[in-house]
Length: 64
Image 1: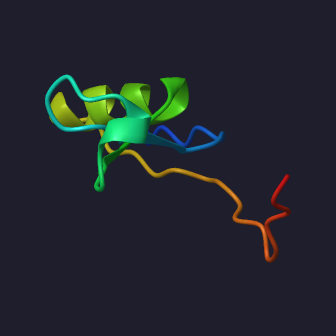
Image 2: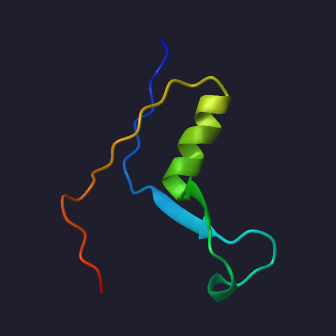
């Protein structure tokens, strides 16, 4: 019997500058997804293990 892995957690958004620029020196960013739970799900999927991912998005994001 093949089991399916269904972790839950947050998906992180990482903003990186191109090259060695600082955030104040650039006009664009490269966005990548990551986070501990996300990385494990991708690893398991690459090994052929069936996976899903449970997370929740907020309706409204408060800016500080």
